[in-house]
Each structure stands twice: as structure tokens, then as C-alpha cells.
Amino acid sequence: MLTWLIVLPVLAPLFGAVRLLRRRRTRHAFRWLLATNLALLGGALIVLTTALTGPAQASAGAAASGGVNGSALIGAAIAVAGASIGAAIAVAYTGAAALAALSERPEMFGRAMVIVGLAEGIAVYGLVVAILLIGKA
Image (cartoon, helix red, strand yellow):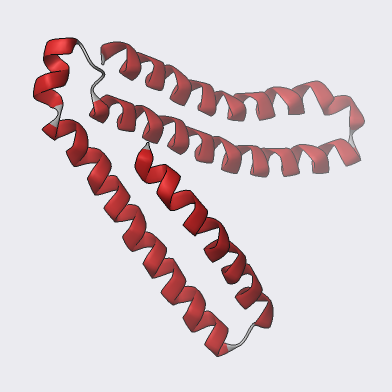
């Protein structure tokens, strides 16, 4: 948790700088954008490595006290994030298709909403998997 408190104030100005550089649309701006993305990727890998090795080192003390397994929590976070991203992509496509169909035939509203709702169900599956992982921890 302490790592996130240190990293987040650094990421906000970097995000703003990248947005300003993207407005230029020059080759120089693209190189800066690529370098910034590589630096953020390296930082994310460092944070992930720290998060994965931290619970492993403290697992002996946590097992005796009944602590939460860090790997299960990271797995739960990945499950929710992956399912949410998948649901967002699915809703984007099905929502656009539903709006196109509704513009031609408004009586198809019910069918279109069912299809969009099925796409949103992907996120619910990820949440269920995360709850099961946290329950096992």
C-alpha cells in the first residue's frame, strides 16, 4: 500500500505531460511518448515484482497469524480487471450495434438491451471469480 502512495503522485504529472506531448503530433513527441510508456512499464513491473515478493517473504509470519495470501488478492484484481476490460469492449460493440438497430426499428429495444446486458455479464463473472479467490485466501 505504501508503494502505491508513493507511485500515484508521480504518475499524475507524467500522464499530464504525455497528454500535452500527444497534442503536438510530431515525430519528437512520438519518441517522448514511447519513452514515457517504456518508463511507466518498467515502473509497473517493479511495483508488481515488489507486490509479488513482499507477501512471499512475510508468508511465514502471516500463515501463523491467519493473514491473507497476497497472490490470491493479486489474482482477484487481475480477474476483475480483465473481466471489466472485456465487458467494456463487448458493451462498446454491442451498444453501437444496438443503437444502429434501434434507429431503424425502435420495436427491437428489448432484444437489444438483452444482448447488451449479456455483454455486461462478463464483468459479473470476473467479480464472482474474485470473490471466490478472496474467500480461499
